[in-house]
Image (cartoon, rainbow, N blue to C red):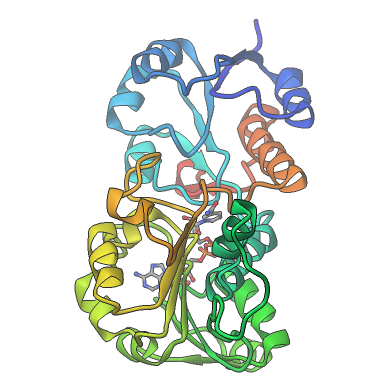
Length: 326
Ligand code: NAP
């Protein structure tokens, strides 16, 4: 019997390829553009496993086109690209890559927080024009970070990694999460559980760390922005649709908040046009986990998730372990 077949929508990295190639007959999508949907649907028809990026949707349509599929592995911790209940109905194990990107993503969120408060990107652009006249008392005045209040919406792995970083800046930490964490964790991270309304009203920095779901879509919209301190900043490294981008642009224009730093967008790669020209906004291209080490670890993890079933093991990061039975 031949090896099982896997489709991988990017060549990933050598360590991940080695794991996949040992177990599978591997087909990679290698062209520079993202795999077109029709191509993806055609290529999964005879595959036993699929390794995708967050840009590919694993939905009812794809599952119907892949009758042999047993595992769908995404190289991301967020799995809003995968319809997990549909995978369960089709007896496909869905997997993601939790844990290996927490610190890297929190580092980026922290970098954005610092950069928007201290106007780093504006300053860089000014110096490069050659028109900076030299030091003056009132140039590029920003907001302080140390001693301020940080509001974390989503207090899972990455949210907590943010709380840890804030300790060096003597910040007060408020958090909102679906479930309250244990008193030990609250004490250890110096974090106070509050409702969303209080968090929005009292925070100087709001940083988003929830997954995208029906509940979190447009969690921050016109109403939320109207309650923010006009001196507060928003950082989004979670998922774009958690923020209503049009409402954010309007709120910035009306000075309801002081600025926003975004890694993710509602309709990537598009960005709401009103945000593009604003100096009180920092825009980076979804690079939360983009370090050499972390992306390589994520790819290895996704490869291990894909091969496990065919090795007679349980995929370590199954999102629907019920498919595997006990
Ligand atoms: P996690 O450990 O699962 O934490 C997410 C937290 O959000 C959980 O504690 C969860 O609460 C909470 N939550 C879920 N729905 C909520 C709601 N409606 N209201 C309040 N809290 C809610 O996930 P993570 O590893 O920290 O990652 C968080 C998200 O960051 C990912 O889903 C992904 O979308 C995004 N991300 C982005 C990048 C990037 O490149 N920009 C990189 C990594 C991750 P419970 O504890 O009750 O479940």
